[in-house]
Image (tube, rainbow, N blue to C red; front, side, top):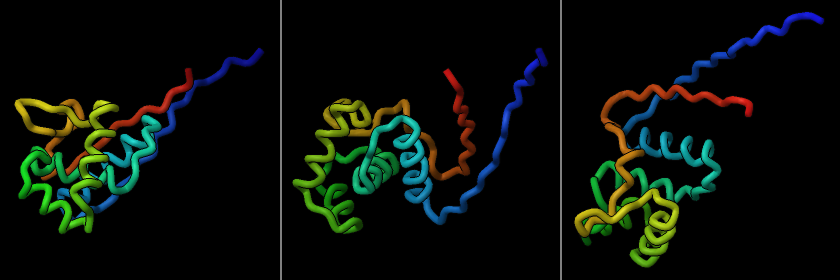
Length: 119
């Protein structure tokens, strides 16, 4: 019987983004895929926008999102409800925000170390 050699494959990928929002959208898209969350593009946009802005509670912030992404307030409310149920959004001190465990500083470059391992 021949000994087996465990090798680790490392693949480096690089993606240039032009804005903090673009970086956030890439990050939350990756989280969605890895965790089988099946988030829609609009949900990822709302999470990213909220992470950058700090919350999605105030009317002026919601209005900015609606104008930027051609969305409506009822649509935002439905998405918020879904994202609260799965723990991505939380309500803290009366404000709806992204769960702090998945918020990072999107104004800086981001390096992810993702391990996909066999069970």
